[in-house]
Length: 107
Image (tube, rainbow, N blue to C red; front, side):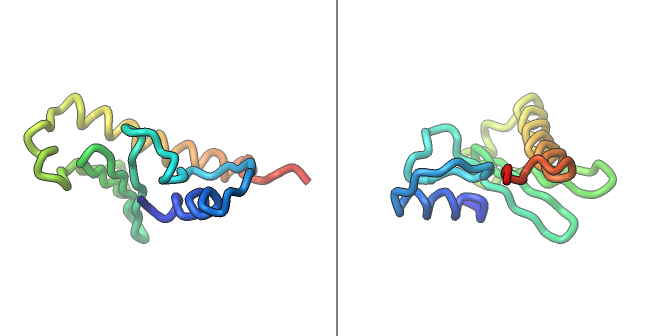
């Protein structure tokens, strides 16, 4: 869970029906296999999925590290590259949507 999941989860607990552009999920209705978390500092972006964490840094630098012992054994370069591309895609899409005013609701 990360902070983007708080809103959808709370609205789900309140039984609200709503349309949103949330990137988060209602954790109580989350299908197995869709778990992930976003983290960030003032310069670095993180993406955690399947026991692995991608850290995106300025100047196109990145790291992929295991955050769970079970993931350390199952890590391979192809899986790391796929996870890296997925992390980049999430953040690029969010940036594109925001920068092009596509996060606003029609008035």
